[in-house]
Image 1 (cartoon, helix red, strand yellow):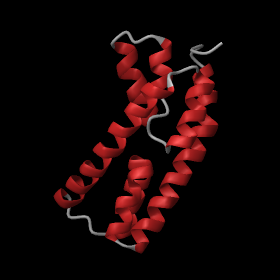
Image 2: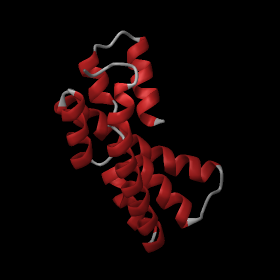
Image 3: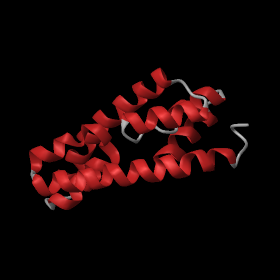
Image 4: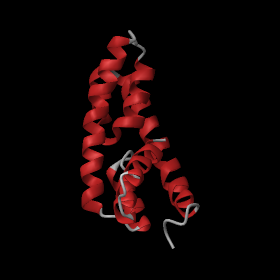
Length: 129
């Protein structure tokens, strides 16, 4: 979903395919995102900027939403940080070891699924030859 909304908004604003390919993998950890970006034909430098903004925003948003909804379950917080905050999910370790474990799980699953599915989905609308 993160790739879909980022690419969708950029596409609606008229972004060229290179920018779309750079924004698509912004929600996974850097080593995986670099490989995906290169495969899709995007700019690694642009993707790294998006990746940094996504990670920092996720850490702030997860904390705010957790307080607002009174969520204290370390498993949920860790998973949310891992899925959305990729490498910056280290913040989960400050919450506790259970949050850290679930952050690692979320980051790993998100990376694997994105690495497998995003390049396949990219070919559906004909964005890549």
